[in-house]
Length: 315
Image 1: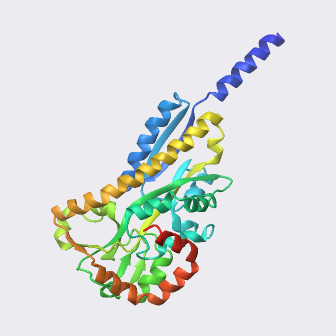
Image 2: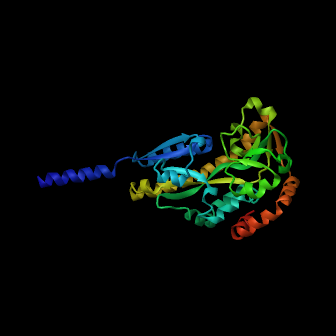
Image 3: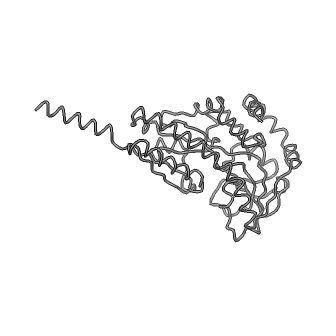
């Protein structure tokens, strides 16, 4: 009888250890490139784990999500989630460099930084008991400005209410001095201008209104995200699966960044063909804008001198 009970217990434990673990990955439904890599990762990890891991990719409307990635993981809404780096400046002040306009000149420079030991050290500062920071993902590329008029200087938007994607310190320090009124209310229908992610330009307005819109390619800053993984769910996997799960997820996020780099050029050409009017800022326009924000720019550069100088050295 005891032998029978022992065998049953061992069998039960064995089945428990091999039970399928499901990870819910929540993604803003406008981030097409992130949905793509999430499904790629799902196929890779489910096959590699022989079914021990299941990935549920869950698109959501950003208007319905008010939690940060770490908060949504702690509340067990999602097991994998991503949030703009601006949400974590308190934990890692170095992330404020992403608010500095025209610090990043090219996608190669961005990639050199995101793959550097310094960026990895910053990433580790974001870990919590509930969420593990896996890697940087992108969020649409360099930011441009859409408007009803051609914009050759931000001062032209003085007095207008403009939508700005996760503004943080950028709007306060570098746009408001130009007299721009900022809103982050995604439900607002009053604004006629605002920041837009380069790879998502096609979603801001219907093509029927394309001829009425200007896409001003200012490339004034980049938006980057960090993707987090549930520590609790990860511990339910065997050590072997844990190891390659993290590697595959990190690699997927790196691929996502390159998808976005390609999309930036493709989408701009698409919009031009569909009737949007494109205005690419010249070096002189950029220089003129930087002159208008010289004082706050100097303060932010000084506050982030070590990281700022390192990124500049990567050009």
